[in-house]
Length: 115
Length: 106
Image 1 (cartoon, rainbow over the protein chains, first blue to last red):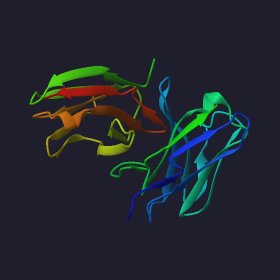
Image 2: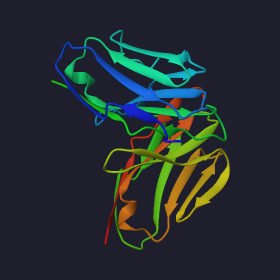
Image 3: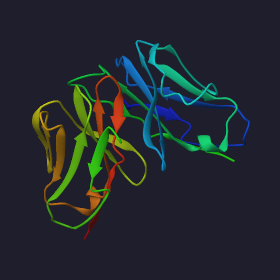
Image 4: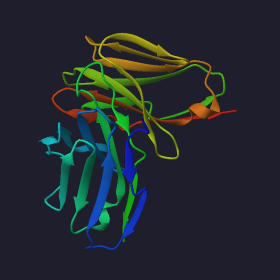
């Protein structure tokens, strides 16, 4: 398996534009996580899915953010409209189980810059 | 107060030194993770443990559930170990430490 695949690797967009980040989890993994990393706040969990169903979205900063997982092999994180403070690296990770005796595998991340 | 505290925040070591990074947490957990983030930005999961000790090559991770404390040790450190090491715990939620930036000098 190629691991968790995220696209694009880099995204530069203007304030107000819609941004869509994509993630393909490892085949067979039933948990998918979206994280955001900034210098100020470090790593934060935004939302996670189990079997394509959103379980906890309490980390989603505001209504401008939305995430979907239409099937087991694909998820999107959308920001509309984007703002400069959304600039961060967004990571996607997948795992077989959320809790003990499993590890999360991370994608390479999408570096988002909103100007 | 952060639920997960790491120390030190920054660490510089000479090649070959034994390194210890500490992680203390204040919440009930089911597992603790050590992550490694290289300067290029990619994150790799090093260990996931819920008790005792795990070893992988030159890396050793220990956890004391009663004391709510974990340590990550690197033996015979090498410049390629230079990275940010992040402690994360899973319980009802995920909590992340702010990371320890390690630089190993040749």
